[in-house]
Every structure is written in structure tokens, then in C-alpha cells.
Length: 281
Length: 282
Image 1 (cartoon, rainbow over the protein chains, first blue to last red):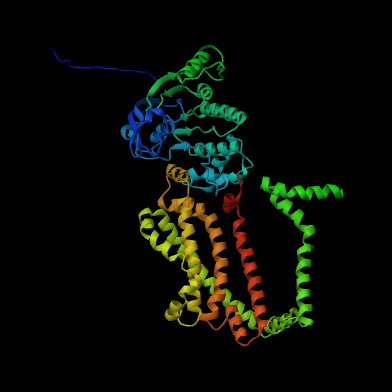
Image 2: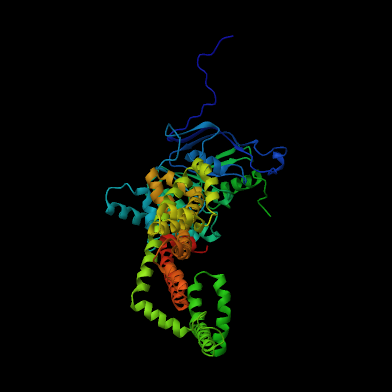
């Protein structure tokens, strides 16, 4: 039998896009901390046993993409995002950003938390100025802070402490703090889930505008299917634990989007079904 | 109007519990008209005290009447003893307390951050903490002799362990989120201390300061009864030996008033915005 000289397997090629974030075969295990297993499939597991959370996740994320990671509750979406951001080390596998291996959090990739990421002991101004504390002059800093406070519509609140703001304002302040750094990548872990419905819709709109305007790479974890369809350039659906990439779907539809028509409608129905819920009630 | 405002007053108690913002307003509204009531009760007690003493219901030597106390007060105030002794007591409390806050906080932060160290010292701290500072009096006298040194040492002991313990707990309770945020923004070690750890524990530290300063003020009286020859505690024990119970009461009242003032002053530390967040209800 002849040995092949050049072997090509599963080669994919796309033009006009740079690989920004590469997640290569990431696996994650946790130690079981519950005395009583959380679900049926963990039956028989004892405290101290290993629980497989992520199983062989491989992803390519491109420059400037808005990527939404969807999945059922407890499937490891946030874990995956924290691994990519460098807060957690995976059990195995490698994350590379622009070809450099991720070993820890970095100041040019900012993480926006679900809630309460602002330092409560600093004013809004001081919080936003945190990431740009190395800027040379005070004027430069001030200019940058006001620029981004204006962007998230928080002018006039710069001397307020976070506990004086509403939930939506806090979230906007945190987004301003993240953007003021002019980060390469923005990680957002269910940033709007603690907000009321209308505020959430507003912030979604603002986030879309912002993304169109500044074209940063955004990784956005959510459990809200509609949110994901409205926001994402690419949808990644994780399966239940141990999680694998169940779906990796590119949405080419331009903004503004009506999720109840055409292609988006069928994606939405498909997603509802794949996550085990009905899209009509 | 009358009926209405009475109803308002009644319900304002309920409002205090519900929304934090109204607290300040409503308490003022409720308190102002009834401020006279406690005052009347206070005066009434003084009058009964004076009258019962006048009619000779008991020996005025064992419980001197208010008039005698006022006279004793003017005596002690005019010959400067009261001021001198108050200053002496305050001096000891201040030095002992500052030492305790400084050492308690620095060691507390260190042990809060350094997990292994905390585990190692935990048993020792828990063992020493419940021992009353007054139990140390024999050693205080032996090591520092009669004088400011032993009083300061006892006050230090009374404040050090509460400060140390609350600081350790406060550092351990800082949400991991803040450290992750700090790491994300590339904080250096020094910046973690300056921008995360120190401001995050400040509200708890201020509360602990308030409590331990109260305790320190209690302990100074006891310490001065034994370990020194000046101060308000010494005034009490010295007057008792001379059977001047009127002086004892003057000293007691002075201790109470100073203690109240100190607490009022230190409670101001809970006001600024960078501490306020912790005391604000969500």
C-alpha cells in the first residue's frame, strides 16, 4: 500500500477573516461538591468525584465577530467564557488569541460580569478610569472617561457611587469601563440577565449600535434565545453537560433584525427545539 | 390636620422598615415632638432622687443627692482635677487604641490574604481572644509597672483582638469577582491592596473600630482602678476610699458623656460615600 505524501483532512478555508480566538479541544472537569447529585446523569457520583463539564470544545472566532454562546442552564457556558478569558485553567486544551496562548486575564480583553463588577467604593468616574490609569495626563484620562460615559448615556452621574444607580445604569457603567480601555475583545457573561425586560431591550439595541460602530470582537454568553438571535453574527449552541458544540451557526442577516420573519424565524424555531422547548405555547 | 398627622406618625414606623431612604426623614419627624418626653422622665427621676434624699429616706452618704453631685462637679471642675484626669484617660485610650487598630489591621490583612498563615495562627487567636483584658492586669503590672504603660497595654489588648478578627473575616469575605476584575485590569500587588483589599474591608473595619473603641473606654476605667494613679477610673477608686460618693458619681457621669461623644465622633467615619455602600440596603 502506498503511503500518501500529503494528507489533508477536514480542511476549511475562509477568506477575508482573521482567526481571532481559537479554542482548541478544551476540556474541563470540576470536583463534585454536592452530597446529593444534581441530576440523574450524575447518579452514583460521590463527593470528590470528577464531573466532566466541557468535552472537547473546538472553536474558531474571527476578528470583529459578535459571537453568542447559548446553552441550557448549568452546561458550562460561563465556564467556557472564563476559560477563554483566562480566569480558569482548563483541564486540557489550548486557547490562543492572535496566535498567542492564553495563560491569564489580560488588560486588553475585558470581562463584563453578570452584575456587581463595579467597585462599590469608587465613583462611576473612578470606576471607568480604572482601566486607563496608565494614561499619561489627567486631561487625557478625563476626556476618555467622559467620551465613554456619554456613549452609554451616563453623563451627570460620574460622581455617583454604584449603589446610588439602578441596575441598568450600573451595567452601562460597567460596559463604559470595559470600552474605555479600547479592548481587543469584550467578554460578556449574561450581562443583561439581572435587568428588567425593557431595560434589557434598550441595552441590546445600544450594544448592537456600539458593535457596528467600534467593530470589536465580542463573546456574549446568554441563555436568552431571542437575545442571541438579535445580537449574534455567529451562534454557538452548547449541549447539556458534558458540553459539546452542538451548533455553530452564522447569521448573515443585517441589523435591524426582526426575529419573527424569514430565516431568523426558522433559526429561532430550530433553536427552541434543539434546547428542548416549544416555540409555540 | 391633627388626625392626619397622628396617622402619619403611626405609619412612619412602618415606613422606616420598608425603605432605607425614608429612614432619616421619618425618624426626625417622629423624634422632634417627643423629644420632650424623655427629658421630662429624666428630670422627674432627678427630682424624686433629690426629694427622697431630703426627707431622709436613706443615708445621703451612701447615695448623695443631685445637689451634692452638682457641687462636687463644680469643685472638681474648678480645681482642674476633672479635666486632667479626663485627658489622662483619653490619652491612654487613644494610644492603646491606635496601636491596636494599626497592628490589628496590618496583621489581619496579612493573615486574610495568606491562607496558610491564617490556618496556623487560627487556634492561637481563638484561644487568646476570649480572655478578658482585665485578666492580664497582673502581668501588665509586672511588665510595665504602675503607670501609663500597663494601662495602655490593657487597652491595646481589649481592642487588638476584635480588630484583628474582624479584619481577617472582612478580607476573606471580599467577593472573588473584585479580584478577577482587578486581575483583568492588570493590577499589580500594590494596586490590589490599594484599590481592592483596603477599600473593600474599610466598612467592616470602621464598624469594628466603633465597637472596640467602646470596649476600650470600658476597660480604661477598670485598668486605671488598679494600674495607675490618675484618670477617671482612679478618681472613682480614690474617692471611694475617701468615701466621697459624690465624686464617684461625677466620675461616672463624665465617663458616660465622654463615651457617648467618642461614639458620636467615630460614627462619622461611616458617612463618606466610599464606606457608605456597605451600610446601604439593596
